Image (cartoon, rainbow, N blue to C red; front, side, top):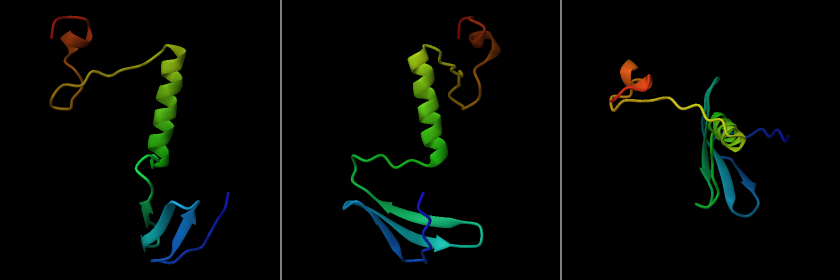
Length: 85
């Protein structure tokens, strides 16, 4: 792991086509601007971990799904128990 000290406006270049610029920084939050080609996925760590976990679950044949209604809540009890929606 490489640890680099950067100030607002300074940048880090990875390879020849990825650039990370420090957009702003406070005591507890750093905002980064990331410029990368469209073909390179840029994900937050927790999103990446969730994708990897879902891929492992899919490869093992076990996927846990949650029913969600149009209003964003969990499905109604009848539908989630195998009844008609």
